[in-house]
Image 1 (tube, rainbow, N blue to C red):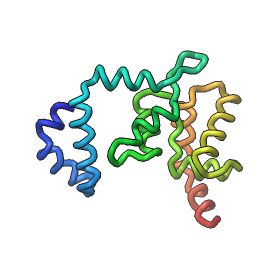
Image 2 (spheres, rainbow, N blue to C red):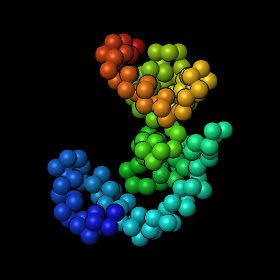
Image 3 (spheres, rainbow, N blue to C red):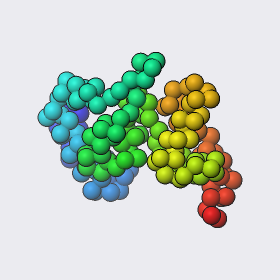
Length: 153
């Protein structure tokens, strides 16, 4: 984070070539500065206080953890789920592909439906929730018929 803060003007110019959204880039830099001021030990302690563990001692997402990330600039609920999953916490991203798959499988195409679908699959597969998310998402996004069938509904 320190390099992003020290070189924020250079970083911003590079980000703008990729994101082309000054507000989002400013949000990323604002988060980097905030993280740098807080320090990793403080952030780490806070994250650990917001995570639960499942029966296998795997870290799993909590509503409080998602809300904590959601309060950061340009981080909404879906991006919060991405961040949490990238940190190794068991979570489901309720993005467009997971919502489409949930609808196709008879679940509601919203956060609740996506979670219900994943938890039902977890009962059958006995797999970690973030593995289920990765497998389903990777498969769903390659299914052209899934995208086309749901556009018509």
